[in-house]
Length: 206
Image (tube, rainbow, N blue to C red; front, side):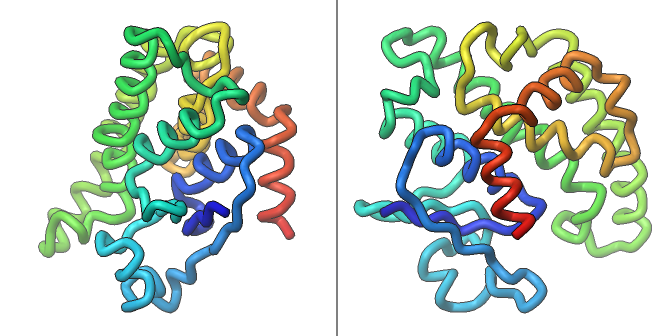
């Protein structure tokens, strides 16, 4: 059985939704960041990067969200979570997820985790000020240029959709107005109606 290591409020939510969409058999371990569980020896033996999410499989552990999402999509082809057989479409899917991972997510993280990049309080404060602008610009690019609708890459739902759903959910957290991103707001509402999303959110709510 697959085992997901995650934490509330992180991109691990996207992986949990994807696992649910895939119909996978999986367990979830919610890390206790307040007690620095992610830095303790047992978890470092699982993922020495000290980050979530991590997905434990029967062949080992997969880290980095785009890789995990790709693994889920390919492991459960009946769920049709990726355009298998279409090399170009698959590259487009990987391109969007890579952009979310490599640029959009770090842009958001600079607002509240500036300590990862600097020690100077003034530099951290400047990152906190600048980060929402950079994050907002990236999300506007997705809203106006990269998002196709009704799903991230067009008419077919894919693993990019829960990924985008979670990142879009950070827009209000960064002091931005979701109404300024109308296509992403519509996607957010559409995602909220999916049974897998409802199931995962209900589980988290307890």
